[in-house]
Length: 163
Image (cartoon, rainbow, N blue to C red):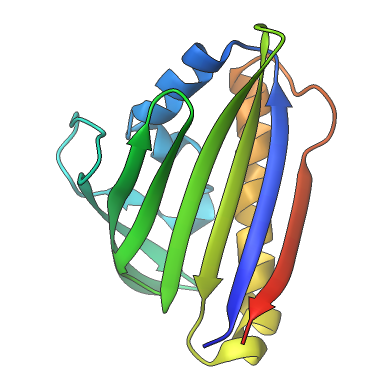
């Protein structure tokens, strides 16, 4: 199985505790997801984000309805958490969110997503990598709006890591 890894980092001018608290509210995932995905959280809100929490979603990928279930496998507030796809469009999806305090006034938000797709490199090249980049670009713009602007540009990198 070929794995790809997306890494992004963006610095926000707010303390880590405040930024982490925003991410700890599952309803905000919908805020950070572009409208073109028709994203809906199916798990009744509010619910406690914690290790072992299960979250059900539905969305549309290129017009195709998709059900997605993730589990929070690591929960270490206010430093990081990891969600992993149990059911969904990817062969594998593991998303690590990190929050690094900078001088007590800013937070460096990191995302590392390791994913594998059906139909391998061709599907990744034609659709998936482009979509994932667009989703995270939207996310960075939205975080900038919510937290009063970004300090510097977001870094985004996608690479093949195995296979």
